[in-house]
Image 1 (cartoon, rainbow, N blue to C red):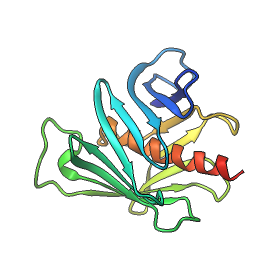
Image 2 (spheres, one colour):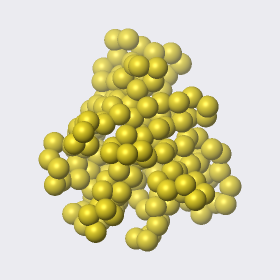
Image 3 (cartoon, rainbow, N blue to C red):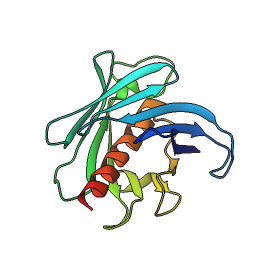
Length: 171
């Protein structure tokens, strides 16, 4: 299980740790996510940097590695916490990139209108969940399918954190 924890005193910076269970004290570092202005972010997996770019309105997001698109997300309606995510099939977790592989469409959406838990759906099936440990914390339990590489899992968490930051700014 992945757990996102705030990284020290840095605001909106998180370490993603692989843990045996959510309450374990120790975990293996997997990635770091740092939110920037707007919807942009920096994602680092191990020592490998990825970028998350956003448009001016903060409704289109792209995860890139060395200029190559790994995944993208679009928030069709500003007032709904629902994002359509497309993971490039060539970049899925496998020994090497497969240029002809099919892309994987996902939906990242709030589980409830006022809640902070988000679910990941593939078609009509729920395949993952990003859930804060309590209403007052950003510590998050992340359960996602193993075929999604760590960078994509960190990207999905970054999208959720952007939604939380927006909600906090709006009061």
